[in-house]
Image (cartoon, rainbow, N blue to C red; front, side, top):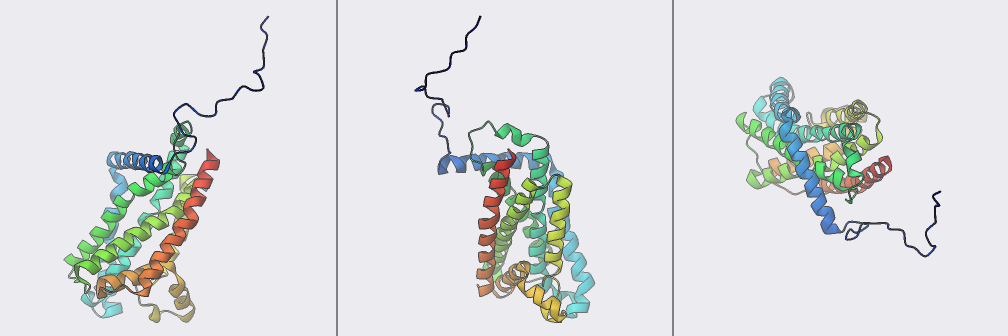
Length: 277
């Protein structure tokens, strides 16, 4: 007969493997985040279709909106380009951030994140890594939009530095907004649900903004919404930088809004992800 003997009361129960900290340090968190970012870039290289929206959309939307609405809104395509190029720049980069939540939900449904449970890594690393890698997509979308505008005859009044500032602001705004969709990816039940909810959020924000038409031409009730729309602040800030080369209060408001979004939704995403696993 085998007798089970309880361990002495003073015996210590191991809670962590020797040599491993129970909570990763800041340096380890950064290293783990970079490792997850590298994993995400490898996934991008093996699935080039992930770049379709950030390569085709800037070309299509810039040419389509410029030639269709240019004459009606500004009298000519040339006069419309200073209005539409910063708008398309912000709209394309922001809509490309929606893919973050969908891809995250697909990975979770496939059981990829189950493998991370046993790893002594920071909880934010599997989320921040792909978000960091997604900057590549925002960079491609923003760069192509500016290049298409230049090819169509657009000449930024803010010069190189102003254009660079608007380009950087767009990428920062897209990365910040991606945390909202990251959080959606951790709470929604399927990738299709994430995509549907994301479209319901982004399409009104982008199209009901001043990205395509001056806010002063809209009905009063719609103009009031456009003025408080955070996308409008990003678009206006991009116009101030690219067309005028000026760092205005709109730039400060846009950056403040980006910081608030990250401060709210990054912890929410990490908390929801921790509960899921």
